[in-house]
Amino acid sequence: MDSKVKLLDWDNHNGKRYFAKSVVGEYAVIRHGSHFALVRPQDSFDGFGYPFEGPAEACKAAAQADFERRILSAITEASAELCSDCPSVGFDFERTRCLSCPRRTLTKDEQGAVA
Image 1 (cartoon, one colour):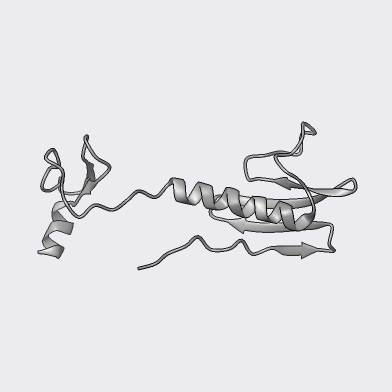
Image 2 (cartoon, one colour):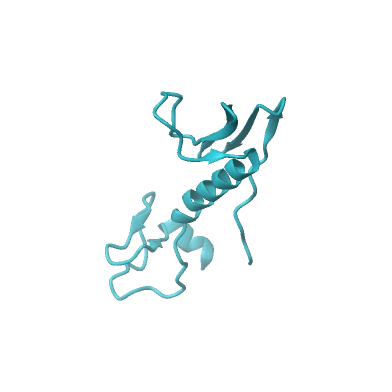
């Protein structure tokens, strides 16, 4: 299955402000003097500068790159094989992670559903 990070969907507010809601928070591109500035979900309007300034489309592109970086940083490569330390099955209601690799073992209920 080929996957990609979806594009941010921008709401245009009179060409002076653009907002895009996402799973990591809201991005804003705001008019700042003669150009635009990007405000990321963790940023604030505190007057200490912005992570990116320039034309509106360039700020939106920077927001998209930041969004993709955040999403992709949470994804790990799937492995079909258990490492030598992986437990074969977790506990009744608990998801157990292997201490040696990022793999999560199945709960007993999940294991029964697969069998």
